[in-house]
Length: 133
Image 1 (cartoon, rainbow, N blue to C red):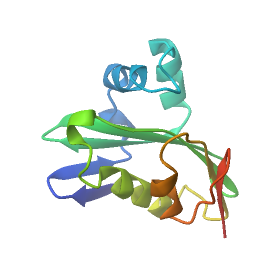
Image 2 (cartoon, rainbow, N blue to C red; image 1 turned 90 degrees about the vertical axis):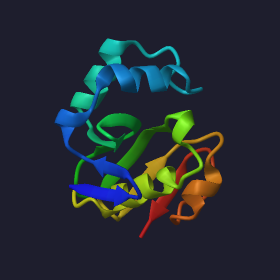
Image 3 (cartoon, one colour; image 1 turned 180 degrees about the vertical axis):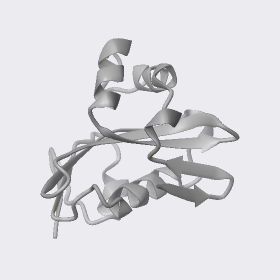
């Protein structure tokens, strides 16, 4: 599937994901700074992944760990700092929630600093944020 946001494209096409770029993004995060490239590759291969692209260059990433019918754990949502502040995080979460493989019944995530973003989508603040319909 593909979504557009201004000049950006959000896609779930696994062939477009650039593991080395994702690894570089995650090395700047508080939650995955020590994750090695092989682990990043395995996590991509075993998850439903979303990339954000501008002119063919990857500028954002997120992945969903899901059984496809009851529960989804949203992880590794990250936007290149040069592209933040343009609504890409919101568009990414919207795309994730619109995806047919992401169940609407229970969605879970964990964040230290983005509660406000996820609360806009019905998540409840806590150590883990839940969205249950």
